[in-house]
Structures are given as C-alpha cells and as structure tokens.
Image 1 (tube, protein in one colour):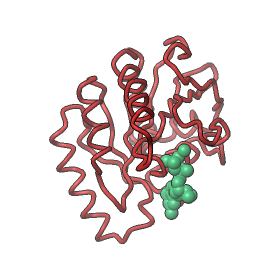
Image 2 (tube, helix red, strand yellow):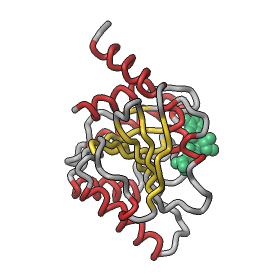
Image 3 (tube, rainbow, N blue to C red):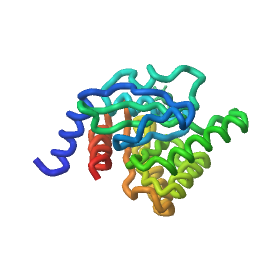
Length: 212
Ligand SMILES: Nc1nc2c(ncn2[C@@H]2O[C@H](COP(=O)(O)OP(=O)(O)O)[C@@H](O)[C@H]2O)c(=O)[nH]1
Ligand SMILES: [Mg+2]
C-alpha cells in the first residue's frame, strides 16, 4: 500500500468509529476546554456543510440532529475517536441575504474571536458550491482566516450538480483565487456528499492536518 492509501485507510477507520455530538456554543464562554486538536467547517448556508459532515462520518444525520432550526449562530462540537483523537467544529453558516445587520455583526464577532484565539485549531475547511464558485461572503471568510493566520482548505461541494467542463472552469478559478490568499492551501478538494466523490481523500487530508 502507498503512504496515501494507508492514510486513507487509517482515516476511514477513524471516521467509522466514535463520532459524538459534544455541545453547541452560542457564545465563546461556552466553548469546550481546548484540550484536543480541532478542524472547523465553514461555508455559506446551504453550501452542503451538514451533508459533508454526515458523508465524512458516514452518519445520516449527525450534523443535523444537533442543530435546532433557527439557531444557526452556534459553534457545534463533535468528538471523533476512542479515546478522542480530535474535534470537528461546525461553524454557523454565513451569507444569509436577509440577515439583520445585528445578526451578521454578532456572527463575525463570534467567528473572528474563535479563529484568533483557538490555539488547537489545526485547519478550517471552507466549503464552496461547485455551481457558484467563490462569492463575496466566501472572500470575506477567507480574509478573516488569512488575518487570523488559520490555514484552510477550499472544498468544492455538490460536484455532481455540474457538468465536467463547468467543474473544470470553477476549479481553475478557485485555484487562481486561492493563490492570492496567504492562508489558503493550494490544492482544492472536489467533493460530492451525494455520490461520495472526494470523501475518502478529504478524510485523509483532515487526519493529516490533525497529525501535523
Ligand atoms: N446533489 C447534491 N446535493 C447536495 C450535496 N450536498 C448537499 N446537497 C443538498 O443541498 C442542500 C443543503 O445541504 P445542507 O447539507 O443542509 O447544507 P448546509 O446548510 O450547508 O448545512 C440539501 O438539500 C442537500 O441535500 C451534494 O453533494 N450533491
Ligand atoms: Mg447545516
């Protein structure tokens, strides 16, 4: 087996094991102690974040079960592994067209402070819809991560929804944009939670980030 195949297999086993919802933190004072490495997931609402978390963990509804409808302004923590190897952090979705300014400001405050102060945060995954590419709210998120010096991987979601030629175009554009961001990882992940595309490789990448 190649090293990459071994990492994929190790990651598969890890994600197939214990995955447990830990808590929802609506404010920073409710964060769990920073005693394990963390990987955070960010993206516009509806980008496919819950679906990706479910696909990575092989659970049908782990990401959804913890989220009360309408209470999107929370950081949701999941523990992976027995004993715990790392925590996965589901960050509140952004880019609501109709969100009141106050809600947006509150979101920014919560996320920015979390990103800046969380020493155990190894990496963030920024999800981008394959049909839309990087939009202004994604740019803003990427800038926040650059400023907080938190490394991030860009992950194209819903790749099954676009034609191969369109996907190639979006991928090239996203790659070019990533190069302008100091904290962005240069390799873009292409995924479909629906078809399982890119999921084993993304699991391996997350494991690699945790072990780094
Ligand atoms: N075709 C397709 N649909 C997807 C995929 N991922 C998510 N969706 C759909 O996109 C919608 C939003 O997904 P969800 O995971 O709830 O997004 P979230 O708001 O970012 O958590 C749902 O209707 C999903 O079924 C995918 O890989 N392929
Ligand atoms: Mg969701």
